[in-house]
Image 1 (cartoon, rainbow, N blue to C red):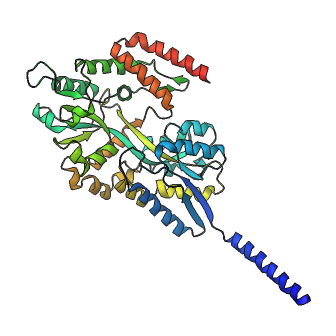
Image 2 (image 1 turned 90 degrees about the vertical axis):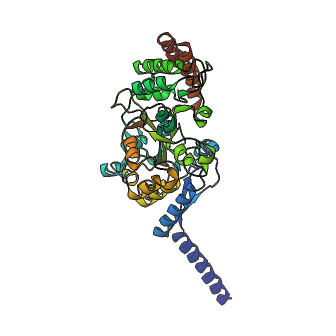
Image 3 (image 1 turned 135 degrees about the vertical axis):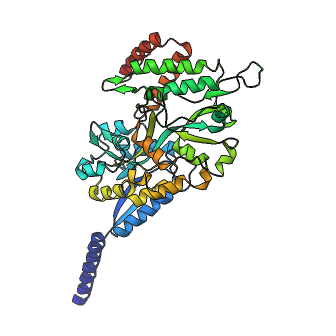
Length: 428
């Protein structure tokens, strides 16, 4: 009997020791929140391969850590997915920040501040505007994973046909208007305009060119001198078309000289096979967006941000993983090669490897150069719609488009400012 008890006791001790051993050596699990597609709404099947390779490198360097993420979440569902996780207290340790939600999530305390993990030398790795996109009230809460500047696409054949030079890097709104004046015409003598200067240029892009903002420290900033100038410029530009609504289809058909396009669109549609379906009948290239003067910054960029959960139990490990994704040159170079946006690291954008990617044969002799891309990233501003709720932005768009058509900018803008302020106060 005593022998049996001894055996049972020994067995229990072994089980207990085994459980303790297993618990001691159990891997830490870092949960990652990402969506399944490109941040820039263009076709891409290779971006998550970069993520998987980075995870493999991280886990190899940290055998006690496993990184997990839920695959297949559509971008349009990701914000709701993350919001639900946060409400349940189950948010990932590190996650991509949904567009337009950065400030509201920072204000709600969803992010862990990053200033304690990094010094000024870390900030210097990134283009200033990309790094600033992760700041809230002067404090760092997210790192830039990838950026996507807006450029001006130019139909080279159309300009050459009219004896006009392709704009230089530091061109102006005055240059744009002058070129559009010369290009907008009836080419076949039937009395109907069939060649145009520009399409899809927005009042937001004009506002950026004049140095304006949609928000100030006190709220909406619609009734500003810059906004008045931007909308008057838009009215003048649209008047050239004599009530014809120029579309991107007209550009596709070679009838339009200028068309704003993101770098991601350029990198998607310039190479084979996508260029067969788009813009294959004429030569085209991209230049920086024009400013009000030669020194103004007219280029907006969007940045995908990676943030650390305020509730993570593994802050040091998460920070190391974040820097592997966002600040490691090998990871960022691979991302630059396989995605359609650009790295937010200057060292990657200007690297020989990036030059090979951008100057590949599929892009032709007029491919965008690393020097031009570097210039855009250095001379750019944050996307004006960042942190504006989509519903509010759509409301502003609708009303501003009406003001441009009416031509009554000076009387209508103050009224719109007052109306939206009252509406937002009522909704609080």
